[in-house]
Image 1: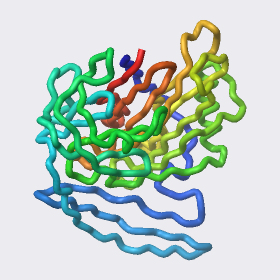
Image 2: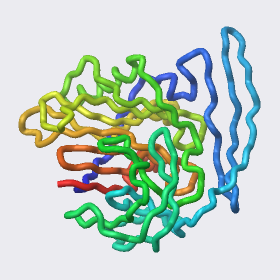
Image 3: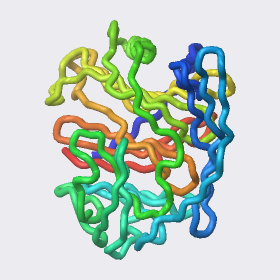
Image 4: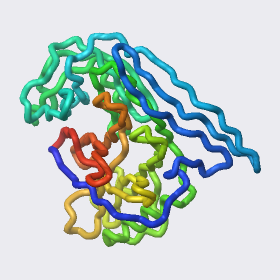
Length: 317
């Protein structure tokens, strides 16, 4: 079953150190610069490292490195898939949805890079197949599906593409109560008062490679069996600096306020990776609920539109 949740943008006045490219400790390290692909090499510009100790600041000039594209049998148009259904692919100018297109750009035997938050791997897959009965989703049979992670997540994706999937900073961090406060405010806006929300994930990343960090947060406390309990919540949001102000976009959310609510669900970041080769990274989210699981690919379009679902698939009742 598929679902689409529109991003909600709320302007927030407070700005946390991690969202300005600075560290909350006494030492700060600049993020990776831009990455471009030309011919068979990927070029990454690193702007440098700045370290502050006491009253002394030391800056090391950045370098430019080149790394070859991975060798392999890649699809002409890079298919993004899970082991229970294909999401779609990039045709060089736009995303194409696997279910809408009705046929996948693979013949079988292609190589795939697998990206899950904190790890990368390689596998191969067969030709187009019907998976996830009885939903009859289009997909491919991945040789080593365990590389994608375990239910309910983090759960990644596989893509038949040779470029560097994680060209910029992706760092799992811990909360000092700053982001719990932000989560509490968002939950309060939705009618649920939680004094100290549980922070399940806190990720500092540079989606666009512009040297300014974004922060992705998941606050969650749900029944592990996904049976509805009043007060359950799972909210996944992105905080991004736009023209000097911090904006918050809610990507996924479940808040159980009464017995009239039909289900409880869990949301998590499965991975953050460049899925179309433009050196900007997409956010892959997982949503689990009773007898179902879904994967969404969120692309940060621009500062006016914000994050938007580019691809999605799901398996369950």
